[in-house]
Length: 390
Image (tube, rainbow, N blue to C red; front, side, top):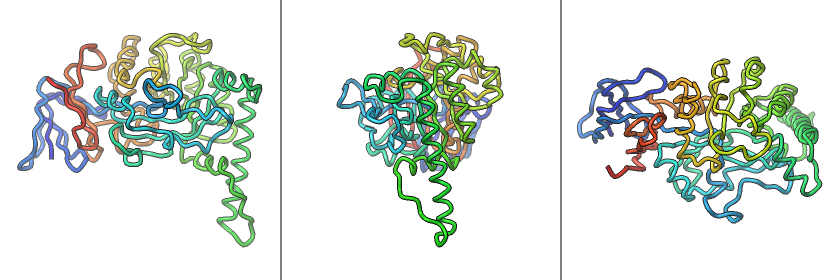
């Protein structure tokens, strides 16, 4: 067992604890408080003068599939040969040996949701994983976590080059509707056969339609890449037609339509906001977006879309949202507990509570407000995976 003592413990789910203590063992948090019962022979970590927080969580990135500094050889995030590829699985393209993983957890990011890019109308499944390990199968928190879909410029641009549908927004919506209708019929036929195999025929196996079953059965949401307001509304229109769960990823013009999004109540994953407006549909990109959506009662997570923004800068993004008026506690939630709840892994990560995974970070300084703050220690699953030279 290990005890962290003397630090300010930011639990996220409750008040900060000055000079608090966190006891963990067996990979789990055992106790948190001003004082906890300390077993004999416990290892001590003195966090005096430091901030103790849960690890940061990014709910939308491409870490491990778009590798650092490689180019084509490490680009495994877009199977841009077919606009509809729900049977692609992010886990199969992921390299946990990529240097981006160390760069992330050595700066306090311990969990990421990663998967296919936005070349295709339907790109395949994302997974949630811890960011330290050699074998991705042992790092998984949730797989699949979501089904990626994309609207707007990206699928139009990719398939216009080959003069293949979709080259319009109408085409994107039509392809998704076609897949959803076929998936709905496939599910109904399969359910009928499983319920009564004597009187119903088993449908012929279809890899694409079978991959959509978790979406149709509300086990995972559609993960909707959409920047522009009209694309966000189209995503909602189609999801509502089929009664499906959906998250609004990027949501770049969300602040312009916040009142309408309030009526929908869907989670908003905002970013990548840092950097240039690299294409037309980003013209209204603003750090105001997280604040405005939060003011309208929506659950907001801040994302990097790494490698667009390297994962190490996730807390910086939260700090810049604070600068635009997002309250500090909400900024912390946007990179910890909110993404955990949106992805459905809040029983494991996102806050410092007994029973959750011991994914903990000790910071010298506040990483959201102090550009010179430093990650002193990162703990994932109860194991110290990084320690800074003081």
